[in-house]
Length: 82
Image 1 (spheres, one colour):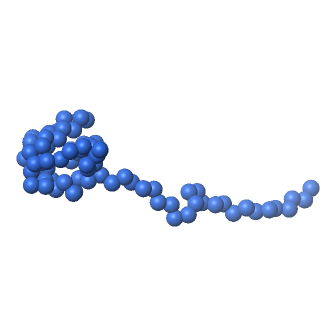
Image 2 (image 1 turned 120 degrees about the vertical axis):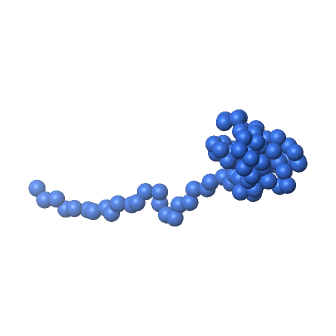
Image 3 (image 1 turned 90 degrees about the vertical axis):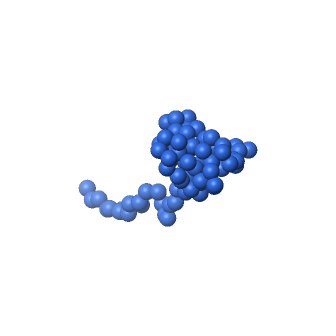
C-alpha cells in the first residue's frame, strides 16, 4: 500500500512511500539523495535543506484537450474541368 508519492527534490524521480513516520530515512534510487522525515518536512542530509512534504507530492499529469488533437483542415471541393 502506497502512503504518499513524492518527487525527489534533486532529480525529480518519483518515489513511492509505503510508510512514513518521524525519523524515517528516504533514499532516491536514481541520484542517491537521502532525506529524513522531520516535523512533516523532509530534511536533505547532504545540504541540510528542508522541504515541505506537501510541496513534493507527485500528482499525475493529466492531458487536457480542449478540442481535436489536430486542427481540422477545411475541405474544398473543386470542380475541375478538362
